Length: 234
Image (cartoon, rainbow, N blue to C red):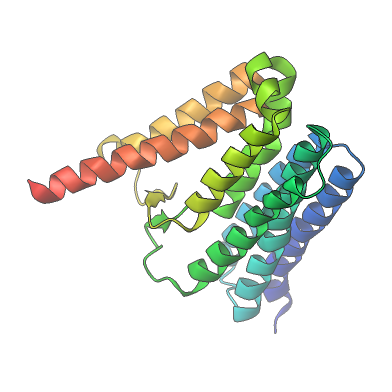
């Protein structure tokens, strides 16, 4: 194998390292740093695919390595993060373990993605990076928004979010893939709107704005599904 074939895999390994360091910080009680590590890992996750395309360095090894790294960073890390938040919300013995459903559903989501040929133009189910970004950004949002602080301090609220987002990971719901075949507004209006809302949310709420960006992404994907269904019926 040529050296260039290893470059995307090296970036994927950096994603994996971010996941492991993020888990360490969560176990140490520093949940705020989890968001930084998830964001950095998401950049590496984008970069490895970008480099593979640009350098024509696709490989079966890279495909499998990417899923394994994502499982740690975008599956196990957010599960431990929510586990820790539920623990901090009260004196519980078994309740926090419900958070591990995030990791289980993430594993199923990643396995389905590897064998599902329908996910070239749209995702089926919530992508694991989006799920991880949502949960890791909650503590940052809670710092500035009292209502968000109530959610992160509420075990029942966190469990409700865990169940909803775990379901979304494997739900048979088409979601927008932010891939642009062209830059025409007519064909990419909802994609542009998603990016605009994400930028505005980050400007207003900092890292906590990621929460609104992910919610907007899900909502606009549902709008896109409704518009597509109406177009098919017309």
